[in-house]
Length: 80
Image (cartoon, rainbow, N blue to C red):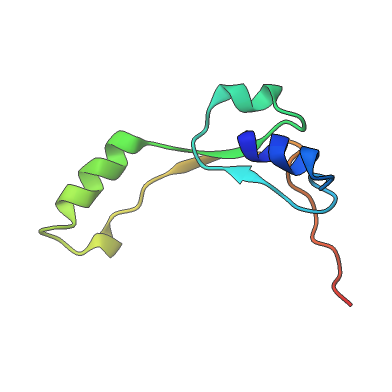
């Protein structure tokens, strides 16, 4: 969310010039300007998988995430 403030101060428009996405799933992202798109991760499952990966193939474990799309992401501009 701090990045959104810094970009705004520098005149970089989100999402028109740059898309921003969080990876912590915090609810406070809804109050950011613009509201922050985020991915929520199950940190407990992630830790358990990390430990299990010491003894097993890490590719055998998948961890679900939840994507919450808000207005801080948009379509990429065409680069000429």
